[in-house]
Length: 346
Image (cartoon, rainbow, N blue to C red; front, top):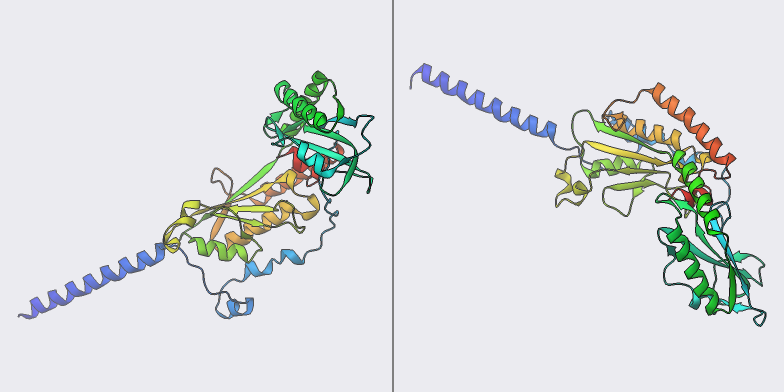
């Protein structure tokens, strides 16, 4: 074999090796980022990694929050309420009898329907419970929710359900005028529709995509926990039993893939349902912090739904407008995060 042939063979081998190496490098570069073993902030700094996510300890921040109510109760502000007076021959109704007389469903059309009894022992209105005795009842149906205002058909269903309950416990109901209540429902629905804010940010990958495990690990460092739906994580409220502060979601198919590590995620959605969260929790500020921390740690960018980057000044404007919305809701006795607001905006 001549020197020329040997040289060409060596050169060809080098070119082939370079092509293989480039392909491997490109494949590795484009592969979804994977979760790493959990490390402390000191470990991350020692490894030259950015520990920004661990700097946000949301649980340590103090919040001046009202105590959570024991249970939701009907309120004439957002409910039609019919009194259900016991007949003169009946002095009290047991909780067991009241529960047996309750309708099979707790809705009138698309609106929640409820019955409360006046507990003769505690002297408070409550949902009927076994082992208690009640001296009177009231039935209610919600005037509006996110499906719209109470209409005449739903009101009629409310009357039928309440009358059946009253007949079963030997009582007589008294209903408000239907047309007045339907008009009140429409006015409340108009107000709610004009003040129902749901904010969303997108966090988009700049370069490499993310695996579900990588997303979950980074979000968990901010306090997010897995939700009931695949591809969904939530930042819990500081009080048990209340709606989450924020919801982080990504492609559910990626989370359900046979090999999630190979699933490529390029976009996350961060959502805040304003009326469901008490303003004392600082939900919008925490939303900004979470979005910025995730984008910084995962090499992403925070955008709106159309993919346009959100500048700090734009977020400042949103925050200012949000404070005005909070004030308006409070003036209407529908403060964000209150039981009434959570029921109305649901």
